[in-house]
Length: 371
Image 1 (cartoon, rainbow, N blue to C red):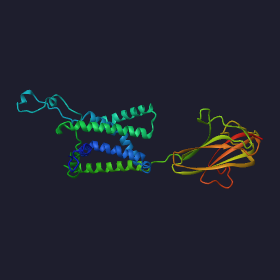
Image 2 (image 1 turned 90 degrees about the horizontal axis):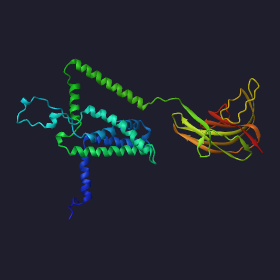
Image 3 (image 1 turned 45 degrees about the vertical axis):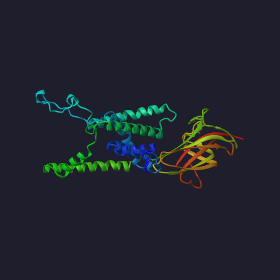
Image 4 (image 1 turned 180 degrees about the horizontal axis):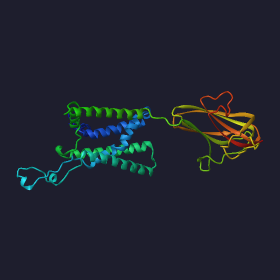
């Protein structure tokens, strides 16, 4: 019969054992799991993923934590300095293990940190290479789940191997010794020179920390611009900047793809106005410019719009570093040769009379329209 606390229930015993294991988890391994959890939240949470928290924990997670967990699984024991003495100094009462006399056990803290960085730099690309040959590919969520799973498994193995060792042989991070030594060095210096150096060290650390924090929290913005372009679909359905339609029939549509890329470092509202124009053009040498196959023809020195009709207007809102493709069917409303199919981009609402002069960006094609 089960006890009142349910201790005879296998599930209850397993839950109690798991809870006890978590409470007894070494501090450094618990910190590694905490970094994994915070990084997952910072990378996936809708609001937090837009903040510098994602960058800070993401760098620590990718560059250090997987390697540290792997090193902890490989070397669960603390570093033991070898004892060197002559045979005549050794007595029968000496209780020194043979492995301590022969050499070091484990690795010291500096070696552990160096290996953690090195193995992280090796493990992360290998996991990405494996994901590249899977249906999930190299994307944020698969990489995040793979690295998190690898780290959790490595932490579990490291904890099991440490618990399997005697307490005096287990590796541990001497947090308390470090804090005590730092407090003694800062607040009880041996000489006045040490006190001055301590003040200078603290000031340098604060200055470096504030500089890095400012660089992360207030990143320098690069050039601000918006991309505006036309694309077509090839036979495989891929979008390409080639083979633009140039021959149209009145009121019969042909497809085009209008693309916008936001590099303005802020959320921006865009409006696109499509026009069909009959234009009379000439440059200073009286040479008429015509380009029926290119969307990037150089505008003439002088031009006169003889007729213009608006075909369509569409809008979208994009965040920084976002792109948008709109599949648009062009249906000319009048016929003519060498007509200009014009697309004007505006940030916000367009003016009452859109034109190349007041547009933020423009692209165009020279087309022929028959009845």
